[in-house]
Amino acid sequence: MRKLLIVGCGDIGRRVARLAQAQGDSVTALVRTAASRDELHKMGIDVIQADLDGAIAPLDVDGRWILYLAPPPAKGKEDPRMRHLLRALRGTPRRLLYLSTTGVYGDCQGEWVDETHAVAPAAERAMRRLDAERQLSACCSDKGWSFVIMRVAGIYGRSRLPLQRLRERQPVLRAGQAPYTNRIHEDDLARIALGLLERGVDGEVYNVSDGHPDTMSDYFKLVASYAGLPQPPEIDMHEASRSLTAGMLSYLQESRRISNRKMMDLLGIKLRYATLEEGLREIFANHPDD
Image 1 (tube, helix red, strand yellow):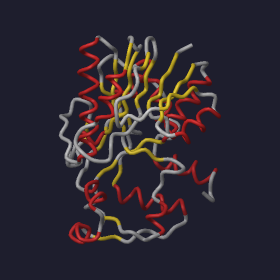
Image 2 (cartoon, rainbow, N blue to C red):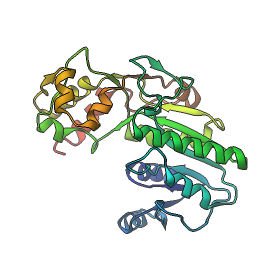
Image 3 (tube, rainbow, N blue to C red):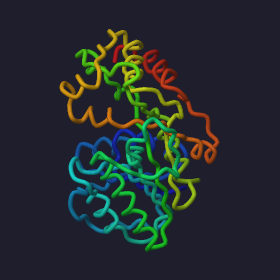
Image 4 (cartoon, one colour):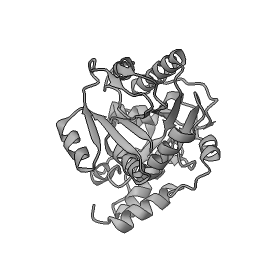
């Protein structure tokens, strides 16, 4: 039986926890709020309540497998939460796995990107993730701990679709101007996280996506089709720069196609939702009214 500590146990963490419990693992979660604590207790999960925005009490992690899912703060270029967690650890963990983002590669002008590609984050949200990666790597290298980093593409699933945006008729970029984007279904991500925690090569980075990128506009249009909503209006980049939010524009200014070959070759798994269309078909067939 493995002893698993999930740091930041939101939706993805709970999916991982259920899989781990089904395998007979012991699961502990570190969360910030009392509401999360109470929900996890109902799942039979032991809980440590702590706020990583400041220093926390020492944590005995000797022999534990650690999955770090806590997001960085909303602002800045660094992740103090990772620093606070690492400083609190006592003992020798079996392994640490960090969920980072493919955003650390920055704009690749639509090129295929594998783990050898240079990192060049442009958005602060990606800079914070890269800072956390580097903190983890430096700490584990210094202490001789095993660690793995997974750089995850956009996560989608039943509660993660842009339905409200589509209902509001917010526009998308015209064909030919929209950047490539990459995704992974939330259920596949949970399975992959457990697989990389156990089988990932020490110190290695793995891209996590379904391997079938398409444009951001195609994504919105396909979701609209499955949801039975009108197709979103199209605008060009000049108009987008005047009408869309800064956050959305930052996504539109980066284009890359993520290769998942390294991860797939290591784990030898078959994704349940190998394409966006397969994932949407399952979502709307089983939960049409959500």
